[in-house]
Length: 138
Image (tube, rainbow, N blue to C red):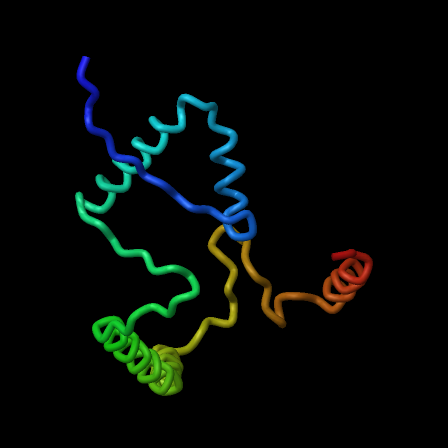
């Protein structure tokens, strides 16, 4: 039987940086590692559309991407503009609420439940609630 041509792939790992990978690799039983490596490589090819996505080592700075830089600048300008407009926006909302007659003083729902406002709570009820809150431990 003629021997088929083969290619060998080698990966270099260091115990200081890749101890998690080494431990995982050593947990795979001998005889299965080749199949696992092929499955990982096929999954990588499928994930990247058959191409190779260059991965730079962690200690090398990433190359300058003008498109990404432009997007960051545009986003920063939009955020700055929104923050500068915020006081005017809040003022317009307050004016709109005031023009519509404001908030009603009784905010109870039709079912009788809801938040009680100042005049709706008697002094006795307020004192009782205050004493209960003092006893409560948060």
